[in-house]
Amino acid sequence: MAKLTEFERNVAERIKEQIELNKEKPELGNVDLKRAIELVKEAGAILLDVRPPSKVETENAEEADIPDAYYTPYTEFTEYLDILPNEKTTVIVTACLKGLFASRVKAYLEVLGYENVYVFTGNIEDWIAAHKAHTGEI
Image 1 (cartoon, one colour):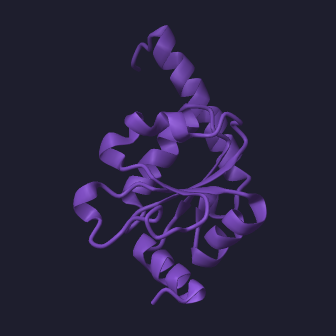
Image 2: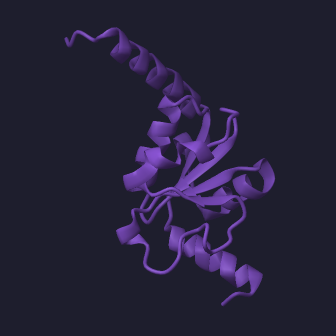
Image 3: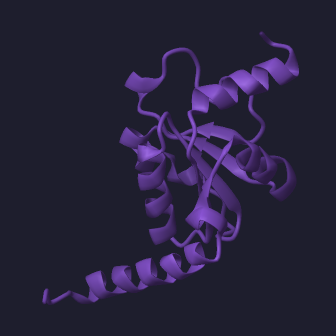
């Protein structure tokens, strides 16, 4: 068995705490489009579009004017930590094209102490298209 440093033990404890919190969430915190939109509209969640720049074909969620959306590309995520809410219980939804980068960012946020992080398991481009259709921008 690996011998962990004090830092590693602290991180492992944080991970354990987050796993317990995720067990209380339906689908362990993975959400579809309907639930993701509910979290933003009803729970005041912020949306983080975490696609790397090379994966953004038209516009990101922030450019599409989705309320409370921020573009925080996975490849530069640590450069955007200052936009994160101070309150660690704020609901956050991470999104990308397939949920892969979003899942990674969810884990990073949880290690940072955020307790209510969800992954949108759909394609963020579908969310943007639905938003544009709803607002009449298409």
